[in-house]
Length: 251
Image (cartoon, one colour):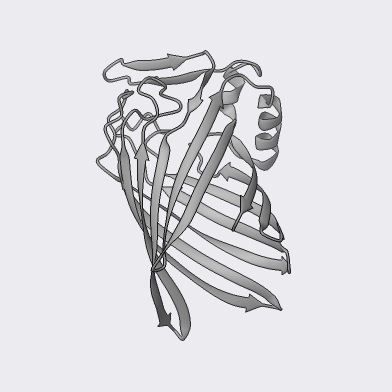
């Protein structure tokens, strides 16, 4: 379970600053049977779940070259890493007669713990991204499209079984459709390159990550209520799904 609180304030000159706080709980659950059936039905991998009981929790990493390992079977909970974000809109250019809005952002992650490997990396990361967006119309439905390309320079994690790469790429693309005046639907594909230097046999950690996100939102006055679903769609990625519930207030 994760609860996230985000504050964002405009600073003028098409710039805003944001601060993200997270509280995370990781432990045993009773959804494993549902996950197993769901992944079997749609054909995505679910084999690792067969080795754990539905109410057991296990976080495990092992390096066959150095024989270092991390194994955690008890509940992990606490404040997640804090993220500071600065965004700036650069302006608009035309590509094939289509106006494209450009912007950039920089993010700094401050670790919350030095001894909770499932919740905090134990060190600071910094990332820089380039944003582009445009809008259109399809059969009367207003559409918005966006693209984000970024790079992250991670701090050296204190929980390392495998050394981190000096940097990795992350980004995504998505589309938002206005179904009705107060209802919107969105689809996103998020991705990142591999973060760790690992032997080829440890395929789950030396593989890129790709996540599908589906969402629906409803606007009431200054409030936006949203619900979403995420799925890791790369073969060697996590077998977990995420259900997202959000509320946003603008004033």
